[in-house]
Length: 462
Image (cartoon, rainbow, N blue to C red; front, top):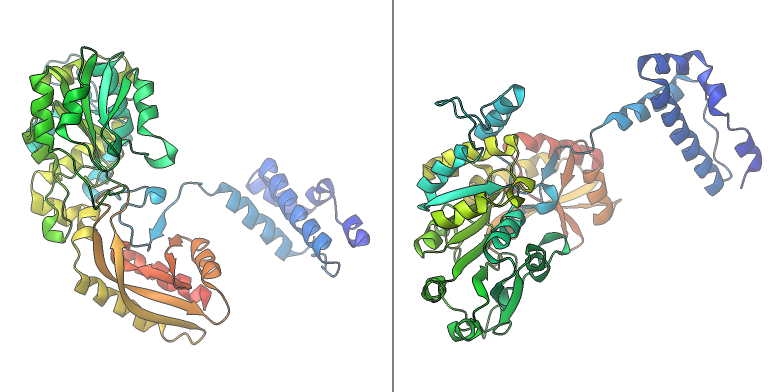
């Protein structure tokens, strides 16, 4: 360690007395400038400790002042910022799941810029309900008798079970005791609702008779959880939802379905099979059906509950509903998103999630090949086109893979992890994936106007 170099580091007060640093205090603030100086000095100190030959910067130079200015501006950056999703995972939970449509963005802007009739009935001039803005359109799209929305699907399950089965038993198949994102498990969620969990069947096989034998005078709900983020395959068996509905109703019980993701469109034509729509489950006669707004629906974070009028009205009267209610901006975006779903063709055209899922392999390959041609001029990197797989992600359609073409990038100087870091620290950040020791870009999840950012990051790498 070079103690002489360490002793030569100036103190903050001395630096603040310089004319250039004082100008930064006037332009920004003294607090920001002091904080930036400390970060910079601490960085130099650490470099000296690691390398005795580290030269001290010229603390009076314009370059030093610019370094401090850069540090100040870095401190002013928002923590939550745009990233380019080149991972090929359409609903990437870490990246905010569904990007919303322009229609929803316009609706948010209108609701945010001033006041709105959030809880005002404009016809009568009296207090209204925030749920009135989406209930009718949800009934029209799904065929349900009634609807209510909260801030996410976990909250929908929470308030729903708390309303219908507090201090009563909820029957759930052992094969459906799922764990959702963040390590939260269904048994724990049920316990928080005040209900008593009663497990039936086995991990891979649960029959209608298992449910029937578990019913007693304390049973209130049969709960079915859609396995939206995994799939049990092979030697399996589970009853159809319609059969569970008949069993529940014949015993004066509620049939509740936690769909998790939930699609309002039939995605089979896009190669996404085995995913029943919300409408199909409503037709089966469930009393309450919960699903997310920010997954296959393609809208903002929200928890949607549709079902029988008598059930939804009970939920609306639960005081817990206020604690998990949806905010006005999400509500505005949700209403605009649902309006697109009224016309399936319009939903596919204008909802980014459906547009990405429906884009065919040939189209993606063409876009990727156009970018590849611009990359091949760089001799220090190797870029090649390969067929691969995209994923829907976000706890949706776990068994469905989407054919795609990706660009695999390798560098003479950097390994795949370092390339990923270079792209991640680019502005805007670019998130890809690593496969076969190469950094991979999948254009399925990259908007056309974002391709220029990929080019810029590759220039930086080269």
